[in-house]
Image (cartoon, rainbow over all chains, first blue to last red; front, side, top):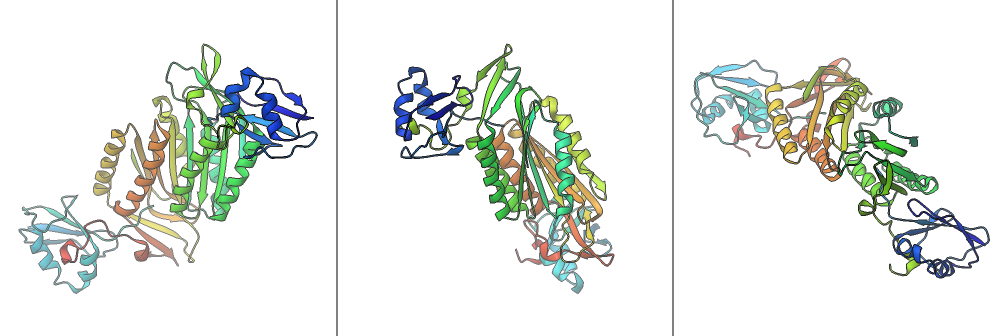
Length: 73
Length: 73
Length: 148
Length: 148
């Protein structure tokens, strides 16, 4: 079981899902029509580290965060 | 009669000299051995405007300033 | 030093404290960048969400980068609402050398804009509207959509 | 606004006053550059001579240049002695836009260093020694020596 959190303007409660890799997470999230645009434009962090590959192995309790486009300052 | 002022570290009192152009000023100042290095490294202003040509005509009462290398801040 | 404040920043107080803290440390150049909310497009103000864990690691990487050049970076940012003509952001560089300071403040502010996990909302009629058009995708975005 | 002070600058007070003066003017970015005297080569401090008429015209040209970009420049500088870890120089830019501000502060500070009619002396054993090696010839120097 991993936990998926949606940051900033993505108004969605965290999800707890079964996933062994980020590819699994991608498949599950892509079934949610509302998330389509956010998935296409968001960066992804695993346990608060930004990642750039779908092959990251996940373990029980990992936290996945979606970071939509930013604008600080 | 024009007045020549020496700015910053050039420790020299102002001079009043007869000169019709900056070339005349250059000739007169170059006779002063002490000024040789300052002349080679200083910028020149006529009536507080920096100039880049020796052909500037001078009139009675003009002020010529020598500005040695600068370092503000 | 990364400082987060609820609401607008007290800019003079922060600039003074940072200046005085670093005064004995022999830095020749201190360059703060102060960001202030502009009155435009009829907004009443801006509002900010911050994801602190990733902001902290972004900031630690910049501390290291500055340190490698003998310099130091600091930052203050608002959380929540900041009204027009109030300030929400100060990023500052201290460096022994002028060129290092001028180059670092530029890179530091630009990377902040491109990468720091902060989301901005316009406040209009007391409602928060995500500033989508002014926002930038973090490098690597779209990973889960297979579009990158 | 070009401000000249006898001795060291009161940096927090100046930064605060400038910030508050421009707060209503809808500038999004405020970047001051603060120059502080470093303890090095055994100096007790630095001392400055300024030739004000040409500094004023240099500054007016920069006011015009900033104005053409919708921005504003200000400056404060010390005359006379400034001890180590005290500050002698603040140059600041206000601009609606971040990129304009970051580019302008760099050019403005560099042109100041290359062109402003200010002479620097090291203070060692209470004596003023012209900082010749760190000084820069103003563009067009050597005119009277025919070497340019």
